[in-house]
Image 1 (cartoon, rainbow, N blue to C red):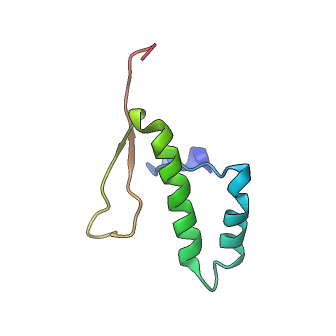
Image 2 (image 1 turned 45 degrees about the vertical axis):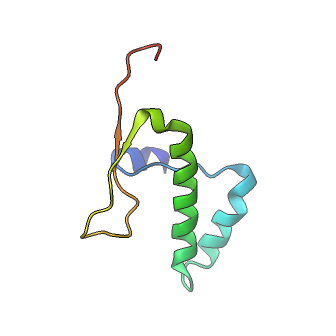
Length: 81
């Protein structure tokens, strides 16, 4: 899923072992409450962004997709930076 996010210009996410039960709950309850899984993904994306923001430019959601989490552009840094 990580590679697919990058290929699609979507901010990737990492499901940490300590938080995997939120992910499982979101999958289980998606049919009845899809917002929980989306919010869980946003939480994971925010955590990823906090760690790697030095290398990421995050686009703002558009008017056409106000609930999107935005696209990603990876910054190019010289080696050793």
